[in-house]
Image 1 (spheres, helix red, strand yellow):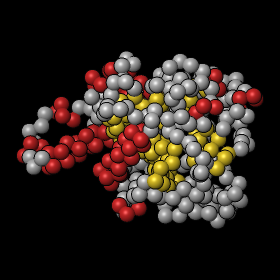
Image 2: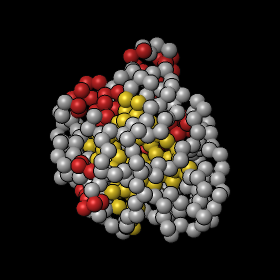
Image 3: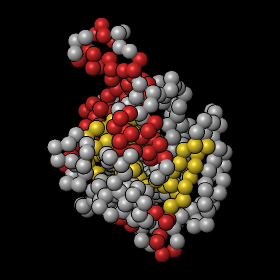
Image 4: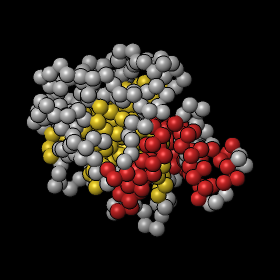
Length: 345
């Protein structure tokens, strides 16, 4: 957490992607009670997160290979999220279509962080076909990924043509090729105009969503990518119904060409006790944790201080589990980000 006093919090990120120290933030290590969510009824739509069975171990995906993930795993995540939303009495739309598109991912490992009581660590692994990127450390900060400003801005960005170095450009080109091959029209690949690779989301639908005519959401699929269960640095989530907007502070990332926003959490003494934390201990590869990162129909998204019918997001963080064995293997995980647009409600 951060203390209640700060207003705006930000680093400056240079053109190489390196951050300066955070300006405006003082960290407060906080002990909280984190409940075991296994056997509990928690749902994406009400609580902001849920666990689902999702078999991928037989697919032999190399999660450290950017191309393997985007070409094979993204589709699996899209199907998983669509099924979860359609099976929800509140998350689905009777007779309506739900558009789900994966657009980005991160791979994380705590191998470069010494385990509690040890000095053992390793150098970060490199991502294959990742333009020099490396596996990131777990984010041990209480945060939410989007704000009232950055969520519509992110959806809007997915309706625009990606930059040359953007992962989206490769995704769009590969999907177009896959469609052509499926239609047995290989020769049309060369005849496709540049407009076929313009954007991940239909600009008209996005404009309607931002205007409030359609519901939209940003959802993460989080997964253990090791064959061992997760012991070290598991991910924990706050029940969305217990997180008031008044406990949030804006965190800005100043890029060379734009400004991004997240929320950090800095509760007052009464509200920190009200935050209900949950996690799913010992997650295995064939389980997927779905996390709501933004839902335009949620109470906070609609300008309220608390969520009502729909959760807006779940605040989350990697945590230190005091029950973790000292010799537990390092956690390795992947989170895929997906955009969702509903039909008219």
